[in-house]
Image (tube, rainbow, N blue to C red; front, side, top):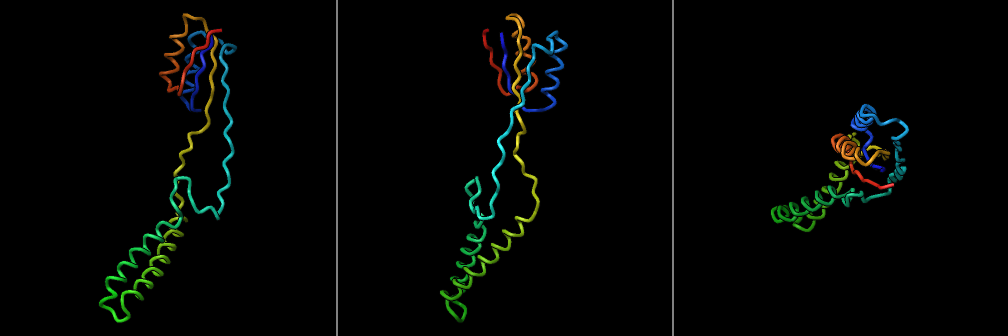
Length: 150
C-alpha cells in the first residue's frame, strides 16, 4: 500500500520523517519529492492595478473628492465661488494623494504571503501499518493524506 501526503517544507516534515524511520520504515520505503515553484512574473511600473483589485491611485482619487467637496462647500463663502474652489480642491487633493502614495510605496513593508515550497511524501507500507503512518503524518501538519492500494 502507498500512502501519499503533501507538506509545506518545514521542521514538521523533518520530524515526521525521523519518527517514521524510528518506527521501522527504511529510507528505501520513503520518497520525499520537493515541488518546484513557478517563477513570479516581473512587476512592471506601468501595471496600475494590483492583484487585489485596488488601484494604485485610490488615495489620490479619495483626496481629490474630499478636497473638491470642501472647496464647493467653502467656495460659497470665499471670493472666487464654489466652482473655482472645487477645481482647486480636486487638483490639490490629487497631488497630495499622489505624494502620499509615492511616500507610502517607498516604505519597505514585509508582507509576504509566500507559503514556501511543498513536498510530496510517498511511503510504501503494509496494510496494518497504514493507521500508524496516517496518524504520524496528520500529527505533523500534513496538508493532505491519501491511501493507494498497490
